[in-house]
Length: 374
Ligand SMILES: Nc1ncnc2c1ncn2[C@@H]1O[C@H](COP(=O)(O)OP(=O)(O)OP(=O)(O)O)[C@@H](O)[C@H]1O
Ligand code: SF4
Ligand SMILES: [Mg+2]
Image (cartoon, rainbow, N blue to C red; front, side, top):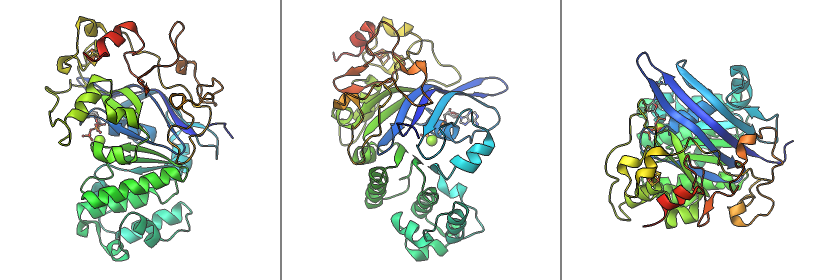
């Protein structure tokens, strides 16, 4: 049994090798999702969110090269590095059991010739869950009659809810929810977020991948922002939504209709041709010459948590919340020297109460200068 209960992603990198190019889909991602919390992962289309989720489950195609580590330390089984684990281990102990996936575009994941009920009942049976399909479906906002439909008879929103129910069939420790609200109207979005919150409060961990920042605000304890394959910021939800420090994160919020409704100009770079400096530079209104020569990825992830985040208590185990025990170097078996701050730098990469796991360290003097509000 480990002292902590978390998923710890450390340097996760995914490259797709194509005949004429390499797609840099995920680069040196570092973050944690702890028991009892919901981490929202946001970022523009194509930045690598789904690829990251699939990498965690060993679901990428053969042309993918995955490096780094992703330690699943749930306390109810041996810690497992999801990157290094053999397929047999992932299939037998992880997928569906310790990690449940709500896939993006769920309709394409349902078997067309079988009813939703038959697929849900089979999942429950195979995963050894005595719960009834009706109960699970009700939690996802479905009526029993909905389960008797074939996939082509389900609306997009219903298929989404079937997928949400399927992800819970194995009572997983971590729910990877990839756009679980697409096609849902506002009340169902709110109900889905309430269910994710309840799952986290019951002691599970939730990684919510979403374009819907309003939904994320309803449920997230912390928010990770991805841009052009990198996780550029991880911050507690309250300061994030109050005004994130990272220019890209600020731009995402400014684009909301409820805020400035001003889109970030330009487009993200091609992942086959990432620039050497900060990838956001051509779109950033705070860029300076220094940004053209951003240091190599900094080894400045979130500090390791010393214990579980307490259920229903966002920020527990988090030094930003004043937990003196957090940051304890006595990490679990997945601990790596890479999670310690490099010599000569403050281990706390925090600014205005925000945690940052940025490829350009905010506690670097240049970075402070670049990202300071102007
Ligand atoms: N099998 C593959 N081979 C080559 N490139 C791929 C493959 N799968 C995904 N990609 C590329 O990886 C990048 C990241 O894709 P991903 O699906 O993770 O984006 P995303 O952030 O989930 O976007 P969205 O918000 O639209 O779902 C994209 O450029 C995509 O084209
Ligand atoms: S200030 Fe510079 S390093 Fe920071 S996001 Fe803008 S271009 Fe990138
Ligand atoms: Mg996606």
